[in-house]
Length: 64
Image 1 (tube, rainbow, N blue to C red):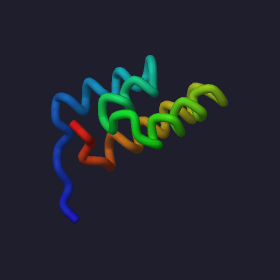
Image 2: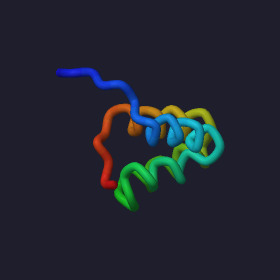
Image 3: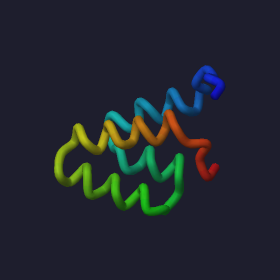
Image 4: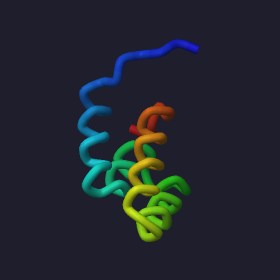
């Protein structure tokens, strides 16, 4: 497993995830199941939504 430095796009997505976590997940993964899971987590609480979004941003290659 190799580690890479976050690109500028990922850094921007981290900041977007602080304000609106589902939007950041949508930009990273599209309208997949992860997007709907993040909406549910954000409804349950802002922090679970942010943590889930940050996890997806750091671990996925993304749809775009």
